[in-house]
Image 1: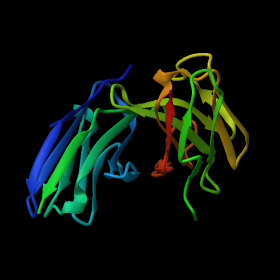
Image 2 (image 1 turned 120 degrees about the vertical axis):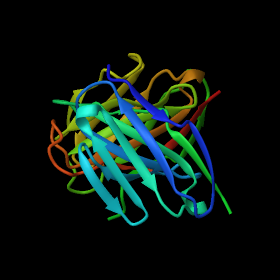
Image 3 (image 1 turned 180 degrees about the vertical axis):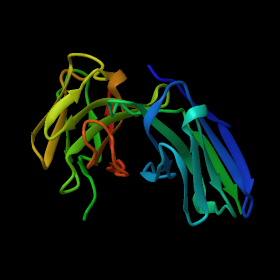
Image 4 (image 1 turned 180 degrees about the horizontal axis):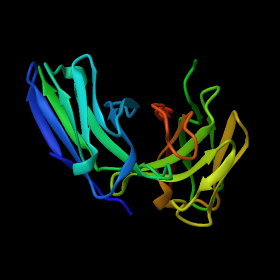
Length: 109
Length: 118
């Protein structure tokens, strides 16, 4: 099946810093989503972004489908950004979403 | 909308018992997904339904697991008999995607059910 690798596995930032999270995938996809799992376990969808660039406030994401990677940018990080960020992908013609192992982000005040 | 509703939120049971997890998707969504999250294996898709029909159950670990969606507003995931290794958080998610994702619709997750099998 499709492989999803996320980096870095762990990231510790000072409040106000910027960061870039990466997701590499091993095959063509038609569905790519970024999720944030907060410290209480709730999974929140951040972006549906199989290609192109999107922005939502301090967060933005870019997917370069031809090169099989996606980037999630967090600017001016806040303590509430802490949690685990997951990338999930599905190949063409199915919705079998495969999740990466996640990047655990800790933002310190 | 109340979002995806799951019940119970926590379940503690003994090995060998039957466990039934419940999910109510967001009204109007036609796709429903069951996931399991463990420390060892991360998030895994177990099964998904489109228009109440199971599309892909290849992620269901064993015959002890079964899922149903009798109507557009309700789904169950049953484990019978349960084993300690089934302990995990089980998430239900819904979306308005078709069998092949074509739109910008995204998956919305419920709060999860934390299952502990003793």
